[in-house]
Image (cartoon, rainbow, N blue to C red; front, side, top):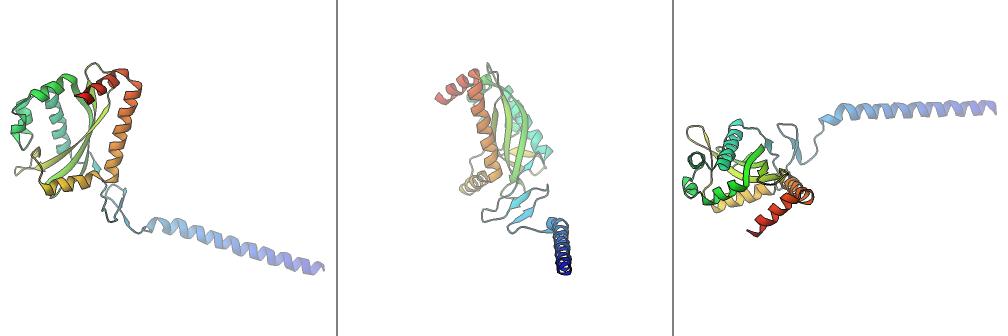
Length: 218
């Protein structure tokens, strides 16, 4: 009887040993091969973020990737705050939009500065164009907080290599393309973050809430 119990104990130890070896091999396989596996419908972008390649063909934006575009946008907002008509005309494709500066002067009287400018870019319709989503903090006359703002620009490369903001009326094809880019999940997340920031400012800053209500009525 004692021998039978001993044999059973030996068998149990052997089974435990085999099980432990199996678990060890499974762990080794996981840690060695897992980072080499690719999930279906996804790929790695240049900056390491994963990009979904489903029917919508989502493309992850690049943040502050082009210094020339960043400089253009920062200079543009500076010119807006100063109502610098000559400068503004030199930075856009349709100069006539700045022939009458009345509306820009009214805006500049309220919004005196655009700070912390960041550009999130997606490919344009061709190699010489870029869809750019710009976020920045607004300095508003008489308002304590500096809420976020977001705007979309279509920036085109000129023959001399410089960049300009395409402020002309978009074609039906371009309009459709831009609307599609707006639906990019990462871009939607940007808009959501800006909306949450504005709602928070309305809730916690009475001076901004008053300003916001005023512009909504205009």
